[in-house]
Amino acid sequence: MKRAFGVLLLSGALSGCAVLSSSSSSTTTTSTAYQPMASMPPPAQREDPPRLADKEVWVPGYYQPVAGTWLWHDGQVMPDKQGYTLVPASYKEENGHVFFSPPHWRRSDLRATK
Image (cartoon, rainbow, N blue to C red; front, side):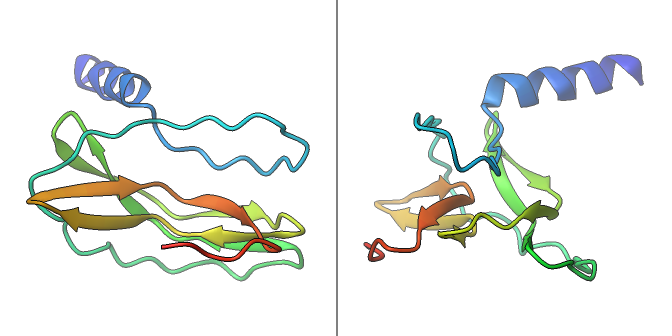
């Protein structure tokens, strides 16, 4: 059991798990390249978001590619980031590969691009 948990932790550390920062003072942007997958992830798991307080936002759970498989990340409550809009995780299929984009914050004054 301990070994399996250690392997899971190690795989999470090596995979570059997506983390949303609530800090708006950060001037650097970090990005992680995710391995393209051969198929779309399973349907999202059912979640019951908690009641949110003022200035809180719900980040829905999502599947992230880790070592050739889809790993579920539970949804979480984050502080709202004034002047930013939460963009949930997404998946794009292109040329037989599925590309993952983790949840992130986008400045509200910028137009969305496709």
